[in-house]
Image 1 (tube, rainbow, N blue to C red):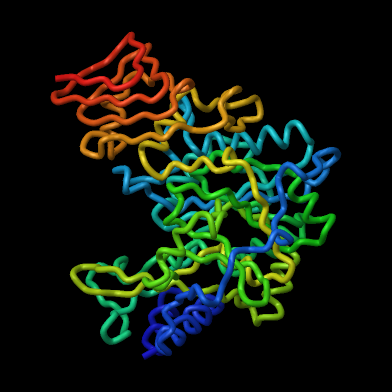
Image 2 (cartoon, helix red, strand yellow):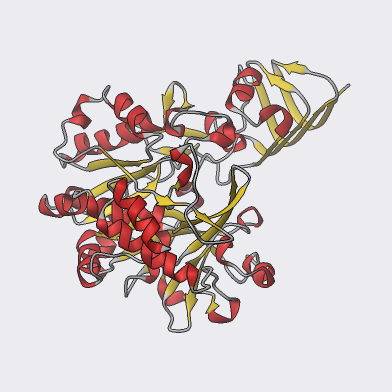
Length: 453
């Protein structure tokens, strides 16, 4: 059966390293391994594996910028918000989209430091051309010596009942993205890893392109250099809202690991969601020693085998498995990995439209280095809940927010019903707006609960 997959992957021109990686995962699936991590095999991480962001030394660390490459994961289309193009093209602050802000931040670092901080985007086939076309507006970026973008790989989908290849007249449906754990294979097979090391880059800062809180901080690379740390994951304190996201743990030998909810046995879900036991979640901001990664690949015959995630899906009315991995899971692949507990400000992703409203608003501002920062005096983002009937898509948001309400003094915002906002609306304290019929608000201070008949 495996030969059918290998033949299909070779026909697509996929690299040998990827084929061997998939083959290993497929054999694990055939052996009954579903990628589950039992509660009995792990525990909460010990304090000696954790580093506090406030304890880092920042003096004299800017010289490390010449050794840092920034890689942004940019494969998402934002389909959950009604988008059909790269999510990173969505305007998030004024007229600037994610790509604008990320690019200008790196260009500002280059200008202020004199060092060529490298910037790259890992795209999917769906986002690659749009990204390349848009970045052409930044000639200084396109002139960099290494590619500004590369494309992640793909795995064949697997029928659940027979473990045979999934067939479809639409050839694109036969394949699935292998998760962002493919990063390590993709930068190796593309020659990017070799190119970065050859040009003197030692550390890669990897983050999602939709997380504008993930800005370059050379103090983190300096800490890794000082203590010879091969891999560092930025983590945040979990809140109840994060209880279903992946959490940090350690195995019986004391090695750090990442457990995603898809890897949790059903009987262990209550413990998985216990934020008092498992206190930290992965922000997907990772720092990687490129030479340590190169050595790992050399000693493992070119493979980076990560804990498997078997993702059951229904495609064209057929039940399939998608084999995936998470790049943060590599924390268990490097001896001496550490987790860095960072402030929530370094984790500001836009996954839903409520996240987008927070970024649009005056809660955040861009400084002269194009770093997204909480407005002075704001320590915590308010809980925002928007009625999914009227605010689920970008088009719905644009229609209803012709003006962006001030949220700087807001502690909580809940909107039920079809409510639109014009200019000069201020939400203060805990705000709950209910509307039985469509209503448009302008020039008003809103506090407490407001009902529109």
